[in-house]
Image 1: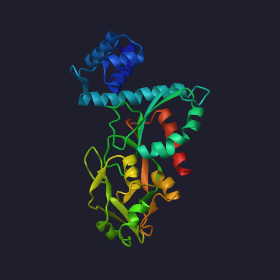
Image 2: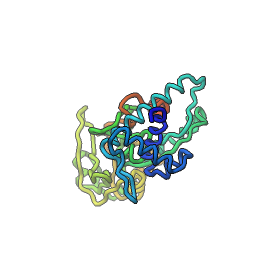
Image 3: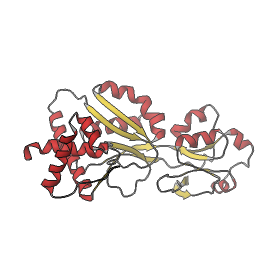
Image 4: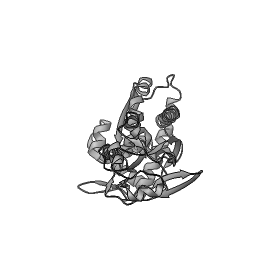
Length: 298
């Protein structure tokens, strides 16, 4: 078993990330029985159940989740060791990354040609969501998230900050009382943003004389997608608060107008998350360096 241990570990990682023995076999170009045998041998060697298998899905046991993290860390260290002896800095293989919708559309994807040109042998699999994803369950190498993260079972690398803004359409503002103070928002139509996982509303934040304060305002409309938030603002449905990156083209051409500029919105932190207990894989580290530079130069 020991001489095949690394191969079995790679097979196990692929089973977890694809969610299926059959899909893992297809990804690795192996026969299904070889994948099944590798999993059985690992469970026998460890004397634990790594996966709970039903006819519909695979679920990691607590021991399986711990072993998955350890396997990813060990295998990434091995891959990085071999990569360090190669003459080229180009990356190989596949990297699965999840990005917030606004960052993907407004910043990262438009700049990706330069990254892809540097690493032509790397296949990028990009998904885009505004919710906190389960990196293990969704087979992600890393994810980028905006704002405070709380206590997570991931490593979080700070990448930089993004500016926020409060704005509305000219049509909406023309038909409503002018805003002078933050408290005036209580008399306006508000479009709130909420987390679709825990249904929690995003706080509205403002600075006044160097002091930061959080607010929540009642609203007739709640959305869980940043593109929908932008559409609601353009449609004149109310006042919104979100990333300036998303709204800037429309602020520049007058389709949106910044409100309460005397009370700026604090910038939000951007972090790179990866599910490893030690050093991130080389490809994740290089992507993180590129994203950090991109945010600094935006």
